Length: 441
Image 1: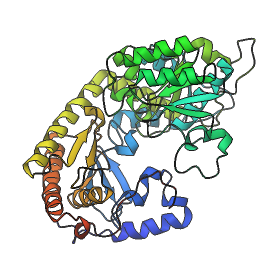
Image 2 (image 1 turned 120 degrees about the horizontal axis):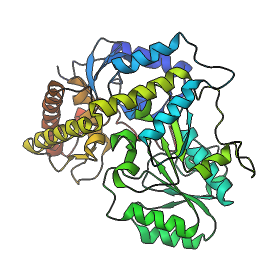
Image 3 (image 1 turned 180 degrees about the horizontal axis):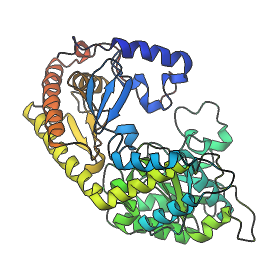
Image 4 (image 1 turned 45 degrees about the vertical axis):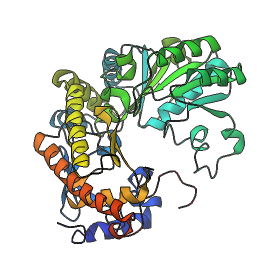
C-alpha cells in the first residue's frame, strides 16, 4: 500500500470528536495528532500483545506502547488475571487495604536500595512529591534539574522552564536552575554559585547515552558535600534498565527515586521511594514539621497495585529486561542495516539503550528535521508500523521485527529520493509534525 492509498477516514472523524470535547484532542500532549502526519493520526480501538488496531480496522506493530508504560504488551494475561482477581473484592476503601502492605513490601524487595515507598497514580505527582520533600528536609527553595532531560512533571517547578510556560509565575520558574548531564564540573560550579540554596539535584540517571564513568557516583558525592538531596527519576529507566532501575544497574543509590510507566503495564500506578529518614517526614512517626507528601484518593486502588505486583513477578520469572534488550538490539541492527543499504545511514539514526530506542531524522545538512520525520512516519504507518519511537515491548516476536525492518527499508528508499531532491515536501502529504514543547499551537 502506498501512502497515497493509505487513508484513515474514521480516525480523522474520531480526531475531530476528540478535539471538540478534549483540549488538544488527547490526555497527553505526546499523543496529540500534531505528533503525526496530517490526517494520518490513528485513533486506537484496542490492542493485544505488540499489536494495536485503529478505528479504521488497520493493524499495526506498535512501539513506545503507552508512552513506554506497556512493556509486557497489551492485555498481558498474567497482569489481567491479577487485576480481575481484585475487581470483585472492591478497589478503594475508607482505610488502607492489606494489598498496600503487600505491594510496598514487594516493591522494596524489587528495589532494595529504597527503604520506604508511597504509591500514587502518575509520574508528575511522584516527582513533585520528591521535590517538596527535598525542600522540606533541607530548608532550601531552589531545584536543580538536569537540563538534558525532556520531562519531569506537569507542575510549575518544571513546566515553567519550557516554552509552554503560560500561566506560571516567573517567581516560581526562577527557583529552578539547570545543570548539564555528564558534566560534574559544571554541576559543582552551579552548586557553588547557589551555595546553601539548592534543595535537590533531580535527573534521569541514564538516557540516550550511557552515563560517563564515575558520573553518577560523582553526583552522589557532590550532593553529599553540598547538603542537597539526590533524586533519580526512574520513570523510564525503572525495569527497562534493570528490575531495580538504573540505580540497581549502576550501583549508585539516590536519596529518593520515582518509578512508574512499566511498573503497571498500562495500569495507573507510580511510586516515590527512598531513604526512611526522608520518607518518614511525610508520615506520622516523627517529631518534626509535617510534610504533605502524597495524599491521593485513588493512589492505592487495589487492582492497580495487583497489576504492579504481577508485573514484578513476570519480570523476575521470565527475564523480561534481558528480552527487551535482545529485541532492541536486533531491531537496532536491522534498522541501521536498512538505512545504510538505502544510502541514508547518516540521516536515519537509532539511538539509546537497546531497551529504550529512539530514532533521529536528519536533513541534507544532517540537522534534526521535523519534515523528514513526517516523511518517515507516513511510510511507517502505511506499512503497518506505529512508531513514534523504537521502544520495544516484550510481546514483539521475530516476525514483527522482520516486518518492521522491511518497512523501514521502504521508508528509507523514499527518504533517499527526498534527500536527492533536497526537498521532502512532495512526500509530506501536509503540514509537518511538531515538537510537543512550543509556545504557539
